[in-house]
Image 1 (cartoon, helix red, strand yellow):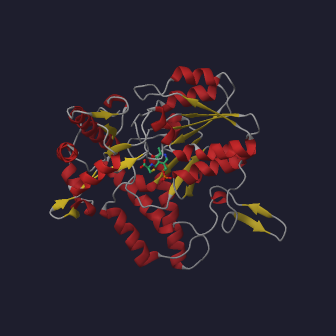
Image 2 (cartoon, protein in one colour):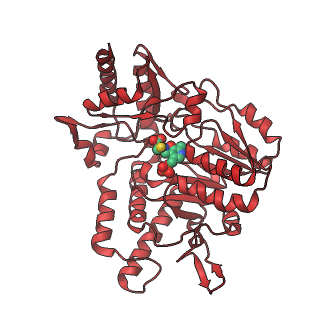
Length: 414
Ligand code: C6P
């Protein structure tokens, strides 16, 4: 999928849609934004959709019968329909608006898991998880005594499926894993992992924070039970994400937060929960953000997810080749065949924060640290890495600037 020939992908035209890319963070140097894995930039279409919403249609949803309230409700629900189509969900009501991927995973841990897991039950994770797919399960472990086991990561940064198969024989209740690593860039074989989990009667949760923004994800093809992702990593606004779930699972889960909108009726001593998806959406939600999320999905669809994946693949392949030329630099993770647009590296014994700071002097934005994947860094015996990441608006020229910047870093420290 990621190796298709690029047809009609004009990065120059795409860049013109993202006003921030003209911003000079250093005098005379437009920013070179290589940190989309942390959060992507936003096109005019998204910024405008939210602007127009506030100027024309702003009101609370599901509450009023006046024109503005009806308009706001319609826009909020239209966005849900668009996002549902984007991931090929059978029905929009299977998409719960949350704040982000983290909240989506916590929702499953608080509702499905607390209703279905007891002491000694096994949850399979992987060694490459982001903290948001680790800590909620560790919390449940302290509270309930569930057992956590991990699919190991090989030296090349791939999941060791033999270790997975041997864990499956121990009757896991849940397999929860990242579709794409935010450090190694590894794109995991989600369909196979899910199929094997289902053969062993386990429920599956995919952390799609880094996959849904970067290539086509089809929940029906994957047959995944839960999928979590965030708008801000896919050219949409911050403050909104999605939990997709299979209908029967969602219907049988207890509600998450209690309050307005998530109820059908309330009496002094009890309440009756609302239908899907509102059962999980307590309180006034991020309405303008939902509208922006819908616009983001429209934007990505108009460019084409296959074209985006192919462009990122080309840039990543080029970046890996060029990074390899730099003496003392070591990129983590597999080669470009199994990898999305992420290159996390160590460089001699330089501290990643120093590297990032010096690159910033040339307007190059990269991230330094453990990227909320501390156990993975421990596994590879490093405290931190420097990470460059690529999205639809990045160019080979920007990769060249990164390489020039890295040689400058070397000079500074010599
Ligand atoms: N990774 C990064 O710089 P939120 O913050 O909830 O939108 O996404 C959390 C998350 C979950 N899973 C994966 C694989 C992720 O990469 C992230 C976010 C950012 O790598 C911020 S730490």
